[in-house]
Image (cartoon, rainbow, N blue to C red; front, side, top):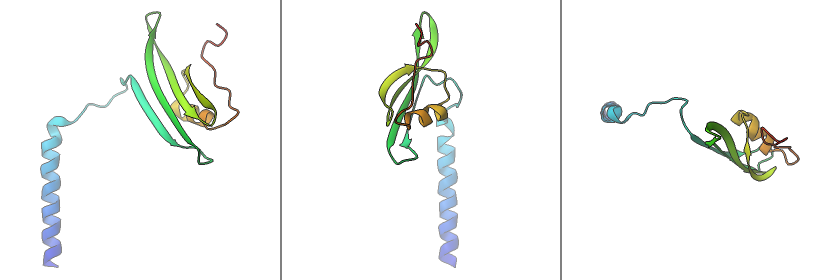
Amino acid sequence: MQVVKVAIAVGLSCHFALAASNKNEQRQLGNDEESVAFAGACFNGAPYRLHLFQQRVNGELQSFYEYAGPAGKGVVQSETAPKVMAERVCRQQAEIINVRYWE
């Protein structure tokens, strides 16, 4: 019992020491990221990968996805939420089109 108490005390002190040392290294979180990558498994077990990034088009930032999965591979300009895009990429017959497909 005494050994368990000592192990818990040592573990807690290490945790607090590590937290104090990382205090200066903490990164601000926000919605200002320009690039985010997602990877996982589809409902059928097939792997998928999404890379959401922003690129300037005619002076304005536009959202793009680079994708790979059962629906194929490609790059598409889209304002779609990542969760919705992951569902599309996971469906083999999904239609993935650009925001301005008519241009």
